[in-house]
Image (tube, rainbow, N blue to C red):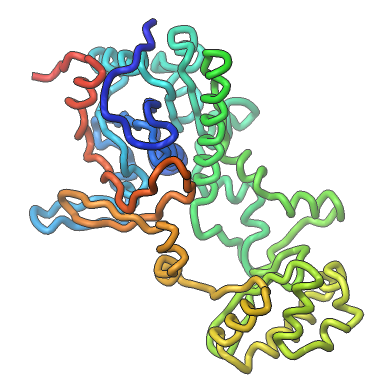
Length: 402
């Protein structure tokens, strides 16, 4: 089939000209396609006509100034810069539109349970012979192979099953979920990496490929130190609060007024810390002379450091620690984190303006590229089916509505 691209104004970025058909919903898939959109791809969100992406109904909500309308800030932040068309992939006319979009698409991203698109006639085995350049990216809870394939999963399920919750939280405390949906987000990021490499390989081979990413796999992939500890010692890792399991001091400490974090990751930094604290005796103590020994006596050392810190304010200590080159920082709330001059200077808070609910601030793009400007604003997330006529016109598809 012809792979000639349609003519339209493409977003700016390294992926300008790349067309993504986004069949994803909620978080893992939309996070992946949001990153692709941030990098310049044209992302066409294909939604169920009956309500669209489930996340449209997830709070928190922004209220319109009139008419009683409200929109999900959660959905808006994840789907900025995309276009929406509502298609029922079980209906003949909508299937025809979808297939015409496939002819010119570079990437299809979905996060259904494995087998869902196969039952609709749009699985990898069916599409690859018809559209050989198409990259088919699938993010799911457990992947497309193994005894758990096909099971449903949510973020908390894979955080628990992947071992992450078993090492998160205070010592001896109950299981704690990581404060962001890291199960979904890591899957979205790994899917984006897989797509990027598939695009590079396609330049050499002319062929697309299947990208299969499981949320549970991604949780195992980020266990880094925990797996190393298990293998090296045979001991099952447990929660340590804010402390690092094998670098000391590397933790949160109370000061006179606020909690700060200090990460003295080598002997030189530890010695500098001791000078700042006025506790040179700690640097010469045999229990603390190496990182390994400091980790073996982490509780004792932590108590000594905190005892010294309690006499002055966080601001005072952070100034001295910075001057001494000791990595440290305040324990910020989300509101405080967004207000940091460094974050603002890096354009990590961007805005969008929705025609109904007004301005929304969102996290910016951490990937800074010298060839492409990092704008301070973003195109708003689309309403359901908002871009139907434009998409059909751009792709040369006759409208079936009257």
